[in-house]
Length: 91
Image (cartoon, rainbow, N blue to C red; front, top):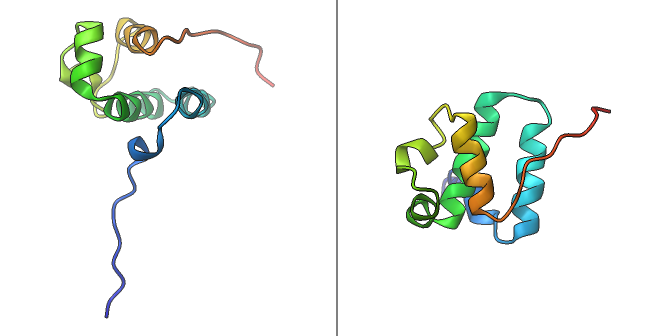
């Protein structure tokens, strides 16, 4: 019997607001736009793309992990989750 593997999907593990906040905070630590976009896509999928799309007025393409979200998209997603962006001094 061979080893069976599955693709890891972070969206399945983002079950609470605290999970989402920690995930996004970690994704933003390195200031890597592609990593942030992927994390936002994961969060959108965890919440349901249709629900996020309805709340933000954005199409699902804008919410996908493969996209290059604008600041407007990022803030719309964050706001739809009941969160806000903030800035702090780097360590």
